[in-house]
Image (tube, rainbow, N blue to C red; front, side, top):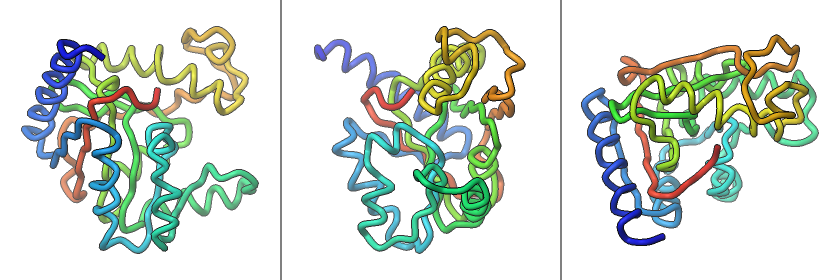
Length: 213
């Protein structure tokens, strides 16, 4: 990446960080995933139970495995081989864990976090329940405003997620949102966190790399 592009992306990160701080969030800006990883692992020091929202960003950082290797009780509902009831139990446990890691589908320069869920376990845990929440987001998630953020979620995040999860939706086949009524539709719950939730300690870690969908 040339220096001008990196500088421009850094400006986006810093503007988004200022917006988040104005909205009450704690913010950490990192230049790379390599720089972010030790910081994120350090945040688990006081946590016994660590939950994870479904996230390709966290997977790219190998964060669940690294936390498990540090003898943390990790709550990962996307593990292979789980029964539907086991998945539900893990999702329920995520709502009261010591630390919950997630990403966000989009965030605005004004510091709003925008997400769409199928089940709601992730967005519920972001708002209330866990003692602490850390949102990890690459620079590719930053959008100019709320309209752009909602478009990004529908057009950029949801189709590849549906395809990855082998859901039978039009967007999984075409890559385009058709506002479908498919039984496997994942766009069921839309949340916009305008300000830090009142009772939740929340930190947003912004990374100057493209991470996740």
